[in-house]
Every structure is written in C-alpha cells, then in structure tokens.
Image (cartoon, rainbow, N blue to C red; front, side, top):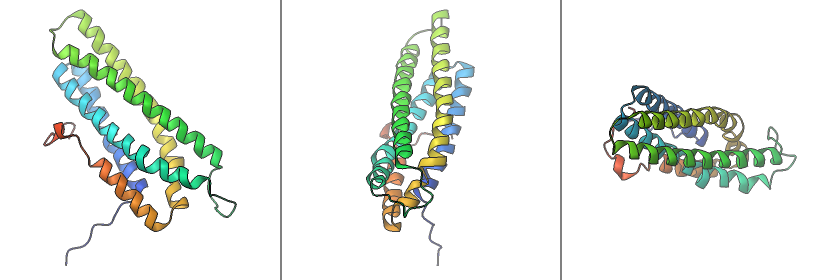
Length: 190
C-alpha cells in the first residue's frame, strides 16, 4: 500500500517557498551579472510571477485567517505576541508586498524596453538601475522574511483549530501552485 504524503502546514509551505524564491533570486542576479537581456527578462518575469503567487497566498489566506482571530485572543492563549504587535507586523508585511510588486513591475517594464533595442551605454545604465532595484528588493526581502518566519507564520498553529489550519494550508498550497499559463513547461531558475 503506497504511503500517503504528509500534508504540510501553512508555515512549512510558505517557508519552503521562501527557499525557492531565494534560489530564483540568485538566478536573476546571475543573469544580471552576465547582462544578457533575454535571460534577465526571463528570470525577472518568472521571479515576479512566483513572488506574486506567494504574496497572493499570504494576502488572501494567511493574513485574513490571522486577523480574524487576533481580536478573539485573550489571556488564555499563551505564547502569542500582543495583538497590536502582530497587527503592526502584518501591516508592514503588506506594505512590503506593495513595494516588491511596484519595484518589480518597474524593472520588468525597463527590461522589456531593453529587449527591443540594441546595446548601448544608456542600456547598460538602465540595466545597472534594474540591478540596484533588485538589490533593494533582496535586502528588504531578508528582513521581511525574518518577520514572517519568526512572528507571523507560527500564529495559525496558535490561533486556529486543526481543521482551520488544514483549510488554510490547502488555500495557500493552491495559490503556490497557480502558476500563470505563460510559464507552462518553463524551467526558469530550475
């Protein structure tokens, strides 16, 4: 009888996705170092799509599940940060999400323009600006991920029933597997 694959928790799914996104980001930096515009665009577009999937999972499933229960917490729930601290952390994470998507959209637009032109000093300058933007995103992602992994990702296990945790994990998993159709069969960053 085949063994059934153990379901992952929301914490495990999102933590593992951080590792995947880190690998994709390294691939993007490698493409930027080589300054090969088509490869930069391919890596950037895939990273943007995958990060958007991760953000969607958090915004549509994780954060609402946590926020709906923070108001119900009382002194009987130990090991929880004060609700105000959790609310502030989630607000910061959502602001980070907006920053990431805005910066990546601008980088995509710039690299798309470069794909349609030849090489020049001005284009090298544009690629340097894109690299600087990706570096800023990477640095902000480091602190962002620490907050998520140390504070937010553990909250569902403390706030939700086992059934609610399974429902949350299923919703997150569905979002993390919902790759845009333009990447069907793509091996970017793999």
